[in-house]
Image (cartoon, rainbow, N blue to C red; front, side, top):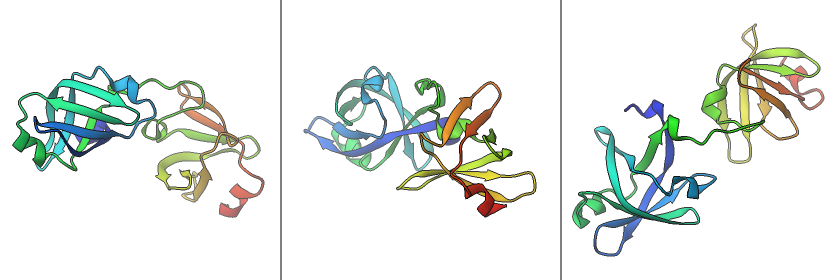
Amino acid sequence: MKKEDCFYLGIITKPFGYKGELVIYLDVDDPGYYQELPSVLIEMETGLVPFLIEKMSIKNNNATIRLQDVTPEKALTLIKKELYLPLNLLPKLKGNKFYFHEVIGFEVMDNQKGNIGKIDKIMDHPAQPILQIVNPFGKEILIPIADDIILNVDRKAKQISIKAPDGLIDLYL
């Protein structure tokens, strides 16, 4: 499986005990959703490698995991490796919530300026993620992703309606 067909689940942080169990950090909103996973993909030097899960217990965003056929020695080589899952295992979002990868290419409609362009990418800044929009004339427009700016996400029409702060779009045009 290719990495671009997957989403980042978390990272193996340290060993747990002496039987080859591992502690993983789950970088997700609802860790409990992933309690019954049959397997995970671990990024190795050769690419994503599937590992079957024998048992897993989750507490907050940390989980203790035992992988099938992984010896205590092999477990130590997995420390700091990233975990992935196929995109089809992502929980479905509703309303104005969206995954960054799903809105690339969506048209952005401002409540005053109309169609301002298509989303080229999402810039995931620590303070706030930002929509990078390219208008039909090739100009870049940056709009922060915030609940008071995103009015509607129409997945069927591939459109996001926004109410940009006064003057923000004019800065780019």
